[in-house]
Amino acid sequence: MTSLENLKKESSELLQLVSFMIQNEEFAIDILFVQEINRMLQITKVPNAPAFVSGVVNLRGRVIPVIDLRTKLGMETKAHDKNTRIVVVEVKEKTVGFIVDAVKEVLRIPSSITEPPPELVTGINSEFIKAVGKLEDRLITLIDIEKILSNSEAKSLSEVA
Image (cartoon, rainbow, N blue to C red; front, side):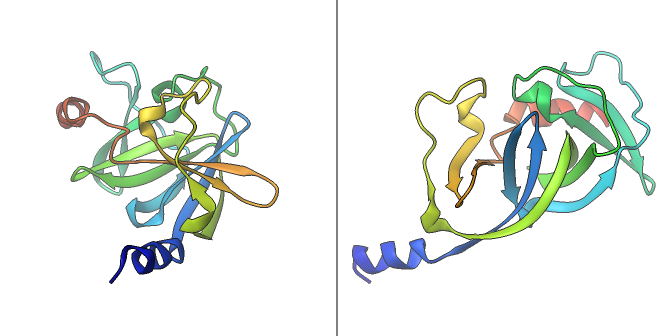
């Protein structure tokens, strides 16, 4: 295949994403990482856990660490409400819950409408950002779920749960 054919093939790929809100921003992660989405559960605090770890939850007999995505992305914290959800994902061979303000929808978008994030992404640690999706009426920031946790952070989560 020529590089032009490769480029055409890549641009026609469909991305399947779960989109969610944090503050007034819309984010999305690849649906292949998502195991389930739950309403807020009782979170048990864990002493000496990293600051971004809210604690652990009992999910059908499994204890999983829960990360506040607002804290991890450097945004101000907010009280949980009826829309707050825990998105349970499998990342670096660990099951982890991410607290988000609200889950919005499942999207299928062509990869051709995404582009690399601008160099100056305001207020968010850009190393976690895979791309920005340009929809007709909005922008969606695609989070690279595998980069959201460093290897040392993933290891420290093993010690939490």
